[in-house]
Image (cartoon, rainbow, N blue to C red; front, top):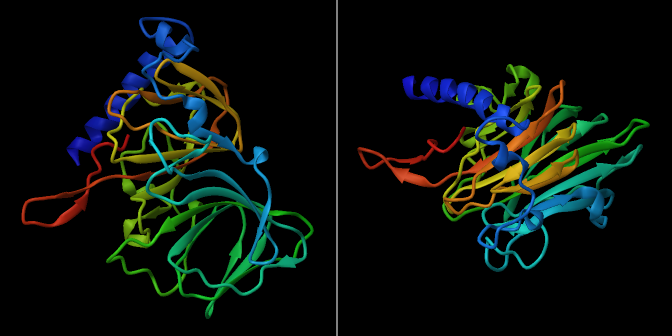
Length: 306
């Protein structure tokens, strides 16, 4: 516990110091303002996608799905197709269900879905369970359960969807899992050291991700630039409000509707930056390596989460 408190303290203090540089002051000015990509850095534009740039495809009869990030089929640090960068989860997508529409009863096979509702109202029925859908609700839909999503209202029901594979040996839940982000105090970028605030974690039924959570980025703040090894997969989605992101020396706009995967090579730092006077909302998810701890037990290696 003391390690987490130290990490949080370091994050707050170092964020202020580096953010001063991100605004054009101090020793980090060059880092914050550089725009060009040196030859040895991953091309950040290939790691980004916005649902507005994707074609619509229909799933479950009525659900309109637009992919943002998809699986990588080549070099994870030099993708051959924009947005095709995922190595652990299968897809990050945006989906809508039009007013007075319902999906046809469907069953997932060899994968499970995580839904995060961003607007509209509806219901989801899975087996004997029924849950209301509205902004801030998260759903884990395991394979093998017949489910239907309905939108009885006059507005679009909009959501982000993360598709997880079912690894060998993983035992999915036998019922859907429903959570509200408002059941706990929502996390901010300056205090993400505690798993108590996560919307979903491994114990809730995630098959690949260690955690998924909405994060409010405080006004005029950032998380210190840091790197991840190649066995970490971290994805951010800008849900409400426009930000900036920094990957190595490359700074890009990070508008709502955009997702990006952090290039994981143990040497390219990244950071999200909120330069405005109002909070911005993001959705964060991460897969970390599994390590063996004393006694031979397997645990997720959480030391890289800040």
